[in-house]
Length: 442
Image 1 (cartoon, one colour):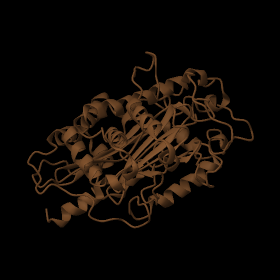
Image 2 (cartoon, rainbow, N blue to C red):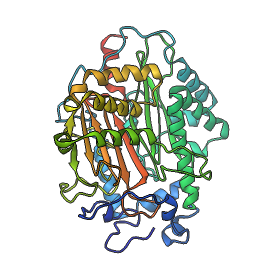
Image 3 (cartoon, rainbow, N blue to C red):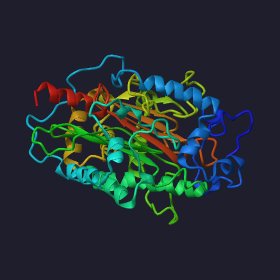
Image 4 (cartoon, one colour):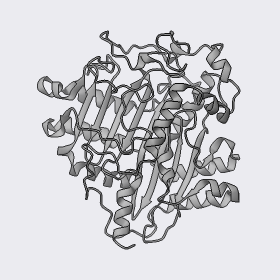
């Protein structure tokens, strides 16, 4: 874990991940096991055995992190606007069905009710929030807590933890639940690799319920939130629509090719394959337009484009109001096959939604496909780490190869991945749809 003195920021983050370099950063076939931490490393030994709360208090002492927490708190306290491309929210992009269908979302509602019926009065006070509560925006993805919102799964009894999984399973597609639970399992595996199971485990996550889970035919809004290391989901059901955004999913290692982790499929194989196929198909002017930077550590990047915590992604935790200009190539300049690949990437980013809801959300994507942009950082042949973004008026999705935090690779590698998903122009946390629901007088 130890960095060279000139690279170290606070013992966990280093300048190596944010410093432009002329040398090529290559993706190799090296296993993540090449970069396993030394369990005798003083940095690990110092925190080994700490509870999640003790670890958080220890991390708060780092000057870099203290400054970052102050910055994040300022962003959290801003009134919600939504991610935009130019600072102005476009209206009328999101629609509800004409009428809410009776029984819409009954399985998630029933699972949530079963969970709530199991909780003590104190647990209910902690887990429940108003649908408009600011706590929606308190989620984060580090292994230490920023805000403590909801119930911490790892301290609950097994039956209550299982009931939370039932809510996840009932709300998500089968593939979506497998991806989310797989990321949670990989977090536990990382805790084992680092010898820190009390800090990183499969249930080191916070869970909350917002609003009143109801099968009322009016489609009254309600939702739930799950967040912690490499997993953050915000699910809302309103007026016959499901929204799952913002989403943050990642893994370190995101590639597991043995039986020890208990998770045998890489988290983002399909997305990575489709993105490389699309990037590799770009030629000439198309490629010049799409490739914004030739490397994920391109020294041509402007100051501030690389961040020690976020690296290249721009719409992670506390970035609810970020202005993200379009960059790269518009889909209107892609051919039919390339546009199909772009849509398949978008569909994979939306695969947490059950099929019917995914199709409705993809229809919104289709309605704005000519305003959708694809941008790429890095080589397009898979020889280097890469970042890409799909960005439309109704969807923004990112994929980024990261340097190690607990593994020792100082430069981005294929086995540490972060992904994000948001609905720009005000529909994160389904806020635009909730406003539509209220406007129609339900």
